[in-house]
Amino acid sequence: MDITANGSCFSLINPETLKIGQTVALSLILVVSLVGNSLILLIVYKTPTLRKPMNMLIANMAMSDLLYPIFFVPARLAEWHAGSWLIGGTLGQALCKIHIFLVDVSLLVSIQSLVLITVDRFVAVVVPLRSPLVSRKRCLFFIVASWIVAMAFHSPYLVAYKLGKYPERLMCEDLWQEAFGGNTYPNYILAGAIVFFYIPFVLLVILYSNILIKLKNQVHPGEQSANAEQQRTRRNRNVLKMAITIVVVFFICWIPWFSNAIIENFSAPDSLISSCSFHIYRTVTFFMAFANCAINPIICLTLSSNYRQALKRLVSCCAADAVEH
Image 1 (cartoon, helix red, strand yellow):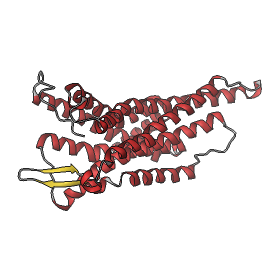
Image 2 (image 1 turned 90 degrees about the vertical axis):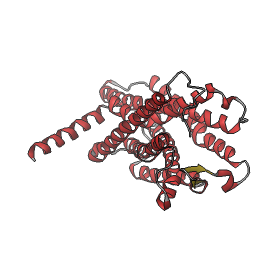
Image 3 (image 1 turned 60 degrees about the vertical axis):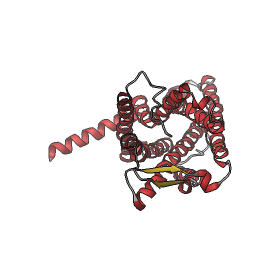
Image 4 (image 1 turned 45 degrees about the vertical axis):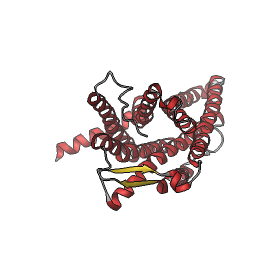
């Protein structure tokens, strides 16, 4: 998505100041996402007690969120400041194709992970006596499947994006119509939004509503097992709090972006999308969407004592190793 400033829309702001502001914001997302998601992966890998389905799925989201700072952010910063794609040849052609492809794959992997986390919590709270639907072995299968599904759906990007050579610059261009013809792109975007965003959103609302109702109406058993039941309920509530927060923040960040994508692809060129207010709106939705990859690790480390304790142990071990050497 091109979010470079429209001079008539930002006439009261110095263009260089605006560019610096956008660069700082995107660079902050890059650093926080890179550090935060790497820590989540390291924590889950180094802590055997955290290798449960929900944490493995959170690690899967962290892995997918790393694609933003590694592939997407550097490309956007280079585009803003150099005004050209910096790498030519076969490598430049490959990077042009995969940087958008991997970013959208990441989004679909995150959504599928959120659905699986919710199903795991639903079974744990609503039908606790049933064997887990997302067991550890099945979880690994679901994780691999989530990447395969996401890559399959976005594989047309590998054909549509090409590196264009011009006298003064290189451009990574979206040539969807040339590759597939007709008016297929808007329908492709709409289908993706419905199947991979809005339907999962409705499903998650239904499942979490049932979970919250179950917790509210939960009746504790007799005195003998009251303490154990209370501990289990408290544990479920704490885990659920983190899961719900991740889901709510995810959809708050991404709903405006998806709405913007649909409006852009189904509106006439001279309609709302050419206005300054819409240009500002799409700039805001861009930063909201891509900030999500930096927010997720913050949520985990803030709301989960298990993650905080594991992080402290990792820091202590690193500090001890540094002292020894």
